[in-house]
Length: 240
Ligand SMILES: [Zn+2]
Image (tube, rainbow, N blue to C red; front, side, top):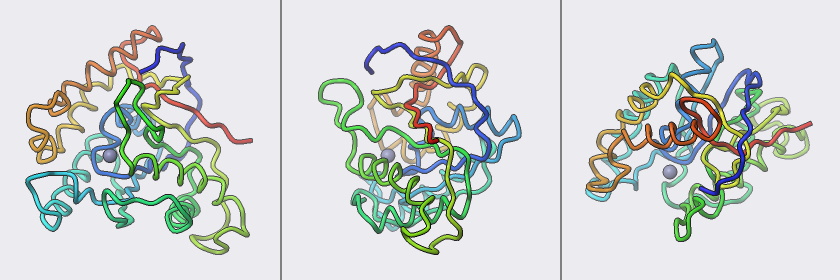
């Protein structure tokens, strides 16, 4: 990750809607912040564009989809999230465009969040050659646009309910992060939340990210940059 100075963000996130492409996306960091928010009484809902059915090489989609939904529900529960919704777009084939924007705008109107949370939508992860996935790029671009669409009554008119303007979008793990969320004291729960994706993690084999303890190293490393025990780097979009 590029080594920019990070500023701690400690504003009130209010109601939170976390929107990502796949099961496990939130568990590589953002879930630590979710645990902190739900402990503080904030309502957090998860919305996943796919069921992650193409995510495990050795497991065919018809078995993988239900397994990954169950793992996602368990990992959400570890950080205090009871509501997990799925949009059923095809895993690996998310397309930026009006159909995805429409589904995301509808979800924002339905849940009426103050803060939307997602993960890195940039082309890479900040290191040479570390290309971000097509789904992450498509989801993030569509979500940032959908946050605006949701507030415009003439775009996707009537879909999902009345227009709703969210106050901010937080993009966790972006290589263009300029902010950080203090998650000191929440590393153990974040690691436990990631560990619930056991089938997925087993499928990674010898990859370093197959060990959920990998996350501790990331969160503590970011924490060191902002003088905290642990932190999540993020890109912050604040809307008027
Ligand atoms: Zn993903």
